Length: 81
Image (cartoon, rainbow, N blue to C red; front, side, top):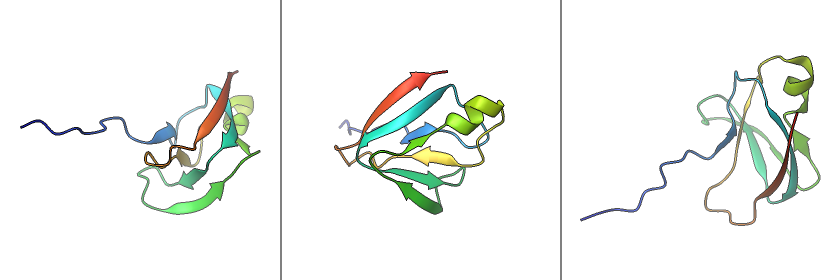
């Protein structure tokens, strides 16, 4: 018997990594979390952006950015830096 499992974790940007893109939230929500995705420090909504500070300063992100894989309304615009 085969089970369908989503093997891709719901991470947009890992904590402690340098961003390669700036993300704009067109719909849905993105969660600001610790590196393991256990603690939610905040939620970004429509019109928000993230990843720009790490990209501009060439410093690692302090937080990870996650989405809910069951929320089909999440739509992001990603622009490479």
